[in-house]
Image (cartoon, rainbow, N blue to C red):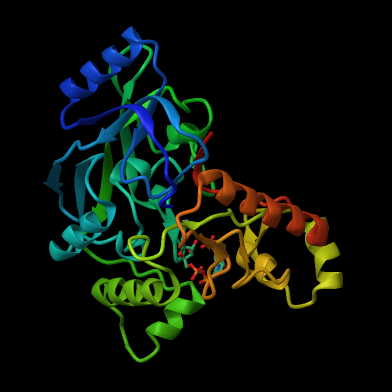
Length: 321
Ligand code: NAP
């Protein structure tokens, strides 16, 4: 988000040994630890008085089976480069998740998702360094308690572990997922889209609609799409007949972007923090305002959406305050 912020201590770690040393250092000095990949989903509201560990754990191991591929990927690998790498080898399953910013280690934390595919659909297990026992441990996908942009790493294991690797199960025979209308439109001229077509279409769609963080500072979606019950949907539909509603198990998913747009926030700015003109779910910080100013703008949007729709928007990125 390009907010100015400082950490009292920072170290880059390229191996598990270096990670151990960094954790020992923080424990000796009683410093809180914050792990950062590329910082592409983190908002610093204040400076950080503690040790920032910058993840540089690298390496990809593939084991090829009859119809599948098991990939063990170190958490410091770049996510989009992993998507490209797997496609180059004709290992399928990640194509809908192209161009998501950040590193592999962040992917299980919020169970990254786009265009109808979520990390949990391809994940086998997560390996992590347990800060309590100082041991390397593993969780199966089921044990990760994945939900919508959610996992155990945001709850019971928050601040207790450092993810060191993920194991993914990819396919040699593609299973295409074009459930999202935007993708269907983009691929309308192609008879039988391949995963490579999907990848290209996803990249194009994202580039058209989302600002590149290196050009216009942003954290992607700033709010989660609200999950609501049938009663809430009925009340909203009486007032807003065109409100988009998507099925979500026994509940329903609303579009946070639609709510923000409908409330008149699209293209608006608050103290230099702008709601992106092509996607109201994205807040941008072109003037490099402070984290506090960005956070206050987000709170103003939350308050307005609550007043107009009775819906409490939840901030999606990690807020360091
Ligand atoms: P879009 O296609 O304009 O759709 C708007 C919203 O409606 C999305 O949030 C999506 O929910 C939901 N939606 C659309 N079609 C759906 C269907 N067939 N079934 C269920 N839900 C449906 O969205 P967009 O803004 O261009 O983003 C495209 C995809 O990339 C979305 O999946 C979005 O979540 C993902 N994305 C994520 C981030 C992030 O920072 N986390 C940033 C940009 C884009 P979902 O969000 O649940 O998919």
